[in-house]
Image (tube, protein in one colour):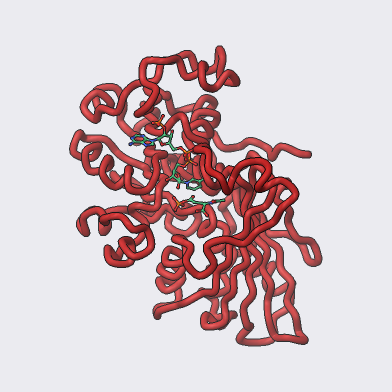
Length: 349
Ligand SMILES: NC(=O)C1=CN([C@@H]2O[C@H](COP(=O)(O)OP(=O)(O)OC[C@H]3O[C@@H](n4cnc5c(N)ncnc54)[C@H](OP(=O)(O)O)[C@@H]3O)[C@@H](O)[C@H]2O)C=CC1
Ligand SMILES: CC(=O)N[C@@H](CCC(=O)OP(=O)(O)O)C(=O)O
């Protein structure tokens, strides 16, 4: 086990990349040796991001796998889907370890990827090799591998909220409905009509119903736990806030379980995993309570009358949903404590 690591970030001018910089700057064992941009190489990163003035004194480098490998041991690819799929094989070939934040290596089935993402899928060999980095569930699989595929933001909140109950056989996997809401930063930094202020402010809209690219990812991972195919109804909504995801999940219970039963089950399941906090009975988490942090907070409402459980799960989409979990995965890959460099308290209010 090495004591330190030199890292590079491709896509460092995006929201995921900038958040990686914020956390890695205070990580005790990681040194950011290169911040990379395809469009602005040669300029100081603080020119586009004045909040990094005197914090990250570095010019942006271009995307050159050999040059990156000469400086760094590990690279985070915080790049759009389609871009990561082409870059990652070159980075691995150059001898780098890779943690990819995009959706390109999450689906094991090439045909499913091509159907939901509308790009050519990476090779089956690399899809098979990539470890799905849902840290609390697959942490041991991340140790000493060379490619980790960081989960999507919505799947992280959804899967952490459902897996313990599904694994225990307490919920009927044919009955799962996920109602998900995200802040705008989930869409990335690039401008688009649907995401500009006048379209989003004081507005609340559903989007991509039944066709969101995270549906096959959630179903793939729930099927792994259930041992048979699972389908979910999944609806995403855009909320006029900057950060945060809340997933509210409904499922039929296979018995008469109380809130206390669920609390105990989940606390035992996540025992030793500092970033999942299970709420006490009758309290449900809010997005502000995890903002800027790597926490995922979960609360329950078991309903004796309908026989259904409601699970509420919140994360910060850019932290636990992207950069924070990617660093958690780097820690696991290196054999370090999973919370190293991630101990920031949520920003409240
Ligand atoms: N925002 C979020 O909450 C989450 C995002 N993700 C995923 O993480 C990835 C990054 O997301 P996010 O930071 O929000 O996206 P942004 O749109 O904010 O940033 C994308 C970055 O990719 C870089 N880029 C674009 N094209 C290329 C290219 N051809 N070669 C190299 N770099 C390129 C861009 O910078 P430049 O042009 O300067 O190179 C930019 O820095 C995406 O795949 C996204 O789906 C996953 C979970 C949550
Ligand atoms: C608010 C918003 O638009 N969110 C994005 C999240 C996309 C994302 O993070 O994409 P991958 O995880 O697939 O890389 C969306 O719903 O498509």
